[in-house]
Image (tube, rainbow, N blue to C red):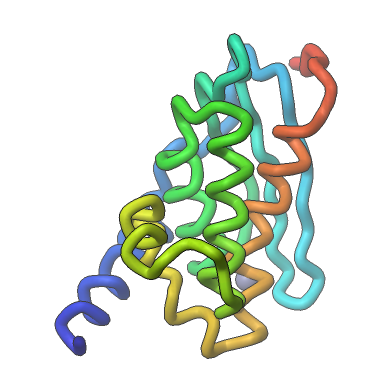
Length: 153
Ligand code: ZN
């Protein structure tokens, strides 16, 4: 288990230092801003929705290692997902980091979450839960938003 934990930590460190999908998304048609006053994390999530799917996802902002890594892995994982799949992913992730029960078995959860399972340890640190979930709440807000063309000004 300790090897696994080390691997998990490495993945979080890697994604916090070299976040994937970082920067403004040209052609985004959804966006939302999130702020976590407890830690000072700020994030903007950009989505390009097409035919009911997340065609592209990027983010900008400044936050701690946990929130940055969470946003990085989230944008990777959410690409290509339908609206319903993305909402289901949000729920699974939320259950994972808050340590609450879900109808899915542990195997099903891990299979669907993939690399996102690295955040399971966060449930032991209540203060960090908000850091991990901030990108996801922002993502969901963007996902449910109206189809608006984002101003590039
Ligand atoms: Zn944070």
